Image 1: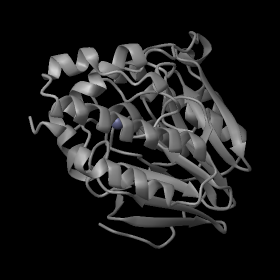
Image 2 (image 1 turned 60 degrees about the vertical axis):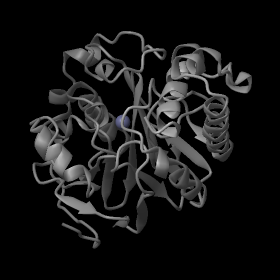
Image 3 (image 1 turned 180 degrees about the vertical axis):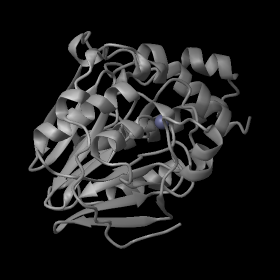
Image 4 (image 1 turned 180 degrees about the horizontal axis):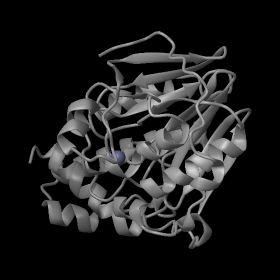
Length: 306
Ligand SMILES: [Zn+2]
C-alpha cells in the first residue's frame, strides 16, 4: 500500500492528560547509557524527557533509546514509540510541547521491537485512527510478529515519501538495506534535522555483532545518507550530533572494513581477528572495549563469506 498524499485528521483528545501520567513515570530510575540491549526498553521506571533541537523538532529520551517528534500547524508526527512505557512519556511530551494539537501520524524508523513498540498508547491518547507509516518491507515482518503492542503500518512506501502537514514537510527516505531491510531516515528540511536510528550512532561502535546488518548495501546507504541536506542529527541512541558525527561514523565503518580485510588477507581466523584487530583512533568511543571485537567478528564473517 503506497500513499503519497498528505494525511489529515481531525483533532482527537480522548484521554485527559492526567490519565497518561501513570505510575512508571513518577518512579523514574537513572538512565543507563552503557546498557543498550533492546530488552532495556521494557525495563520499568525509565526516565523520559524531551528536548527541542530546532523549532518544533524534538528528541525524546527514554533510557538508552530516543524517539523523535515534529510539531506542525497540522499536527504532530511522532517517530518510534519505543515501548508501552516510553510511549506514555511520549504522549505526555507531545501534549506538553504542542498543547491541543492532534497526532497526525506515527512513523516507525524500522521494524525492530525495541524502537517500534507502543503505538497503541499513542492511539489511545490521540485517536484510534492515527495512521502508522513505515517502509514497506517492515509490513510482513511486523505482521508475522503478531504483537498487539506493535501494530502493523497502515501506510507504507518503497523509496521516499513526503509528509506535509500545515505547510511543513517531513521527508522519509529509504536508503536501501543497512540495519534491517526496512530502516528509514527522516529529514525535516526547514530545520535541517535528521532522525537516524541504529545504522549510525554518536561516537559509538556498532551494536554488539551487528545483528540484522546488510553489509553489501550498508556502505551504499551510508554514502546516500551524506547526500541529504541535514545539519543536526537526532539518533535512536545517544546524544544529538551533526554532519561531523556522521562523517566519523562513515570513517569508522570504512576503517573497520579495511582492518578486517587485512586480517582476512593475512590468513587470521575469526577468533584471531577479534582478538588482534584494533582501531586505536576509536578506542575512546562508547562500547569500544565491549563491542568492537564483536563488530570485527561480524565484518569478518561477511568478508570471509561465512
Ligand atoms: Zn534496530
